[in-house]
Amino acid sequence: MFYLNVIETFSAAHLLRGYEGACSKLHGHNWKVRVCVKTKEQDEIGMAMDFGVLKTILSNILNNLDHSYLNEIVPFTERNPTSENLAKYIYECMEKELQDKPVAISEVEVYESEKSSVIYKNDQIC
Ligand SMILES: Nc1nc2c(c(=O)[nH]1)N=C([C@H](O)[C@H](O)COP(=O)(O)OP(=O)(O)OP(=O)(O)O)CN2
Ligand SMILES: [Zn+2]
Image (cartoon, rainbow, N blue to C red; front, side):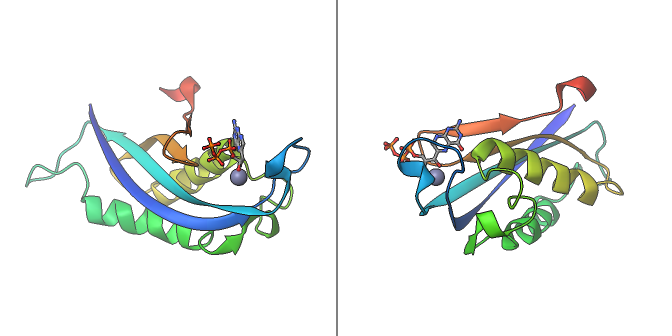
């Protein structure tokens, strides 16, 4: 099995509803997002999938979040914009975009800072 990683970033503001502490106030982060996809396949030149194509798919998803107030963007109007919920949302978006591609989503890691990150993966389909 091959596992391919691509990393992109976005900047946005948020506040955490129901959080007791400073994060309940409006503030921002520069998020880093690592997406990992998996496949057993390689094309005739030895690639599982062009990193450039993967990065474009991820960038298009993150463009919707970049320089936004996350609490006003669906689904974060309902789901708290935690790193956990961001990772799950990006995973679900990637899963849809990869339906006709030769790779499947494996996991998404969202770094809220250099020191804190969350990994989301669907362990039931590993
Ligand atoms: N499990 C999670 N914990 C926290 C989340 C989260 O999404 N998932 N989010 C936050 C807040 O967004 C908060 O802004 C983070 O602040 P903090 O933990 O204080 O981290 P900082 O990067 O601001 O700075 P430190 O250098 O670590 O103090 C909180 N927790
Ligand atoms: Zn925050």
